[in-house]
Length: 108
Image 1: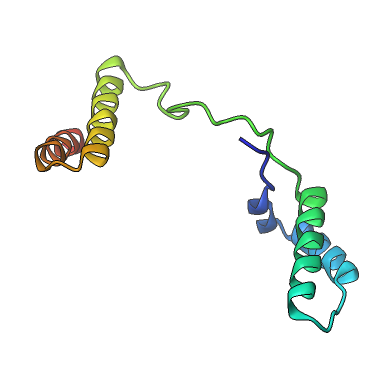
Image 2 (image 1 turned 180 degrees about the horizontal axis):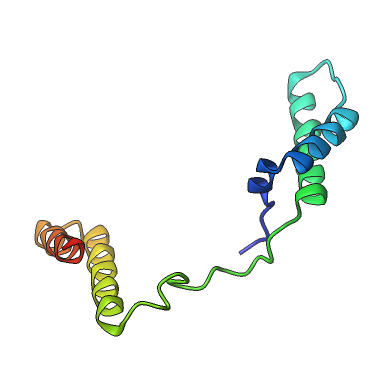
């Protein structure tokens, strides 16, 4: 997985202002629209990486927010996810119904 720019940091006012200022300084006008888009998109991505930073590129851990759940809940979630995956891959009505039942059981 490639590192991603942390665009969500634009919610912070200081970073948003800095990003905007740097982009406006670096953006250039071109007569050709395609050339304008190509060049300025590179500028925006470069400045975004510099100002906002990038992720490590490593994948988020599986079920990163479920570590505190007890074993029974973790097992239910796991079986529901497996049923969902099987239903999506097979497309069979029986697998879809199995997933619906597990999902309904989990919500109770």
